[in-house]
Amino acid sequence: MSKILVTRKIPKAGLELLKAAGHTVNVWAGSSAIPRSELLKRVKGAHGILSLLTDKIDDAVLQAAGPQLMIVANYAVGYDNLDLAALKKRGVQAANTPGVLDGAVSEQAIALMFAVAKRIPEADRFTRAGKYKGWEPELLLGMELSGKAIGILGLGRIGAGVAKRAQAMGMRVLYYDVKRNEAFEKETGAAYVSIVDLLKGSDVVSLHVPLLPSTRHLIDARKLRMMKKTAILINTSRGPVIDEKALVAALKARRLGGAGLDVYENEPKLAPGLAKLPNVVLTPHTASATFETRDRMARDAAQAIISVLAGKTPPNLIALP
Image 1 (cartoon, one colour):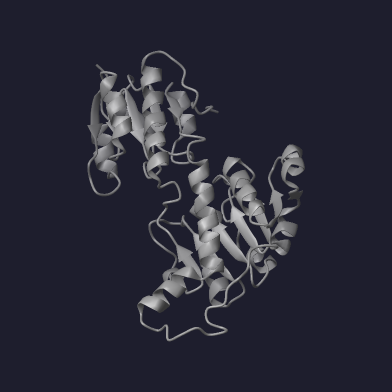
Image 2 (tube, one colour):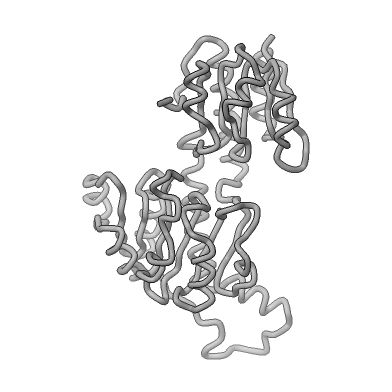
C-alpha cells in the first residue's frame, strides 16, 4: 500500500480516486498552506505528493521523503514551485493539470476587463453606500469595449481563449508570443506585433505568460509608460510578471486607466497602496475557481499519481530538463 501526501484539502473527487486505488492518503487539513516544517515531517515515506503552487518542492523535500518517492503531481497548470532539476536527479516524475482550466481563467480575464472598464465594483460600493440619488449624465463613466483593441501577451491556450472571447464582443486582437501562430491569425484576424507595438496600440492588455527569468517584471515602469493613459492591464498569469510597485505608481498618477489583478508579486501580500486605489479590481487568485475546473484538476492530479505508481505513463507528465 502506497502513501500519498496531499498538501492541502482538495475537492473530494481527487481524494476518492486515490483511496479507491488502494492508497493511504494523508491530507494537510490546515486553513492555510502547509508550513515548511510540517511538509518536511509529513512527506517522510511518501510514494507520491499532490502539491499546490504554494508548496516549494525542492531537493530538501525530496530527500526528506526518501528514495521510494516516485511522483509529484502539482494541483496547477504552472509549476514554478517545483525544482525540476532536483526531481530529475532523484528520478522522481512530475505532473501538472494542463488544459482543464483554460475556459475558467479566460472567463476571469474577461470578467476583470469588464469590471474595470465598466467600473462595476466602484458602482456597487457607491450604490450600497446610499450615494445613488438618481440618474446623472456623467455618473461613473467607463470604457466601451466594442471596437477597442485588446493585446494578448502570450498566446497559449488561455491567451487564445481570451482573444476569441474578446473578438466575439467586437474587439480587435493584437498578440505577441515567442512563437508566431499564423493559423490563429487566419482563423481570427488577429495581428502579430512586437511587445512595444502591442503596449502602445492596445486599449486592454491581458497577460498570459509563464513565470520565467525572462518574464519576471516583464511589465515594469518603462513598459507601463508605453501604454495608453486610458488602457487597462489584466493579469491572470503570475504576479511577478508585473513590477507591482511600478504599477501602483502608474495607477496613482493616472498614467494608466486601470488594472484587474488575480495574482500578485508577493501574494498573498499586496504592494503598499494597491488596495486603496479606486481604479483597480482585485481578486484572490480565484481565476480557476469554478466547481467544474477544480474537480477536474483534483482528478487529473490524482490520476497522474495513480498511473505512475501503477507503472503507467499519464498524459500530463512534465518534461524534466
